[in-house]
Amino acid sequence: MVKFSKNDFKDWEQFRLGTNEVISDREFTLVCELHSKYYKHTFYKPCTCSKAEIKRWIKELNLIWDNGNKKD
Image (cartoon, rainbow, N blue to C red; front, side):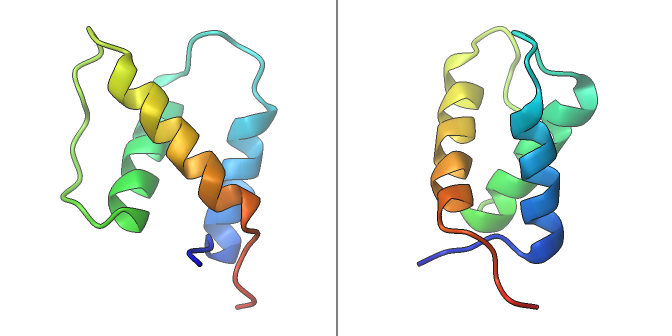
C-alpha cells in the first residue's frame, strides 16, 4: 500500500482544505510533482485546456491520502 511521506501528507492535506473551483499555479505544480513521484512517471504539467487529466490525478492522489502517511 502506497502512503505519502509525512511532508507530502501535510501538503496534500492543505490542498484538500481548499474550497475553490480552480486551483492555483502552486497547487497545480504540487499535483504534478506528487503524481509523478507516487505514480512513478516523469514530471510534466498537463495542458490546462483539458481538465480531465488533472482531475484524474487529484482523484488518484486522494486514494493515496486515504492510506495515511508513513511513519518517518
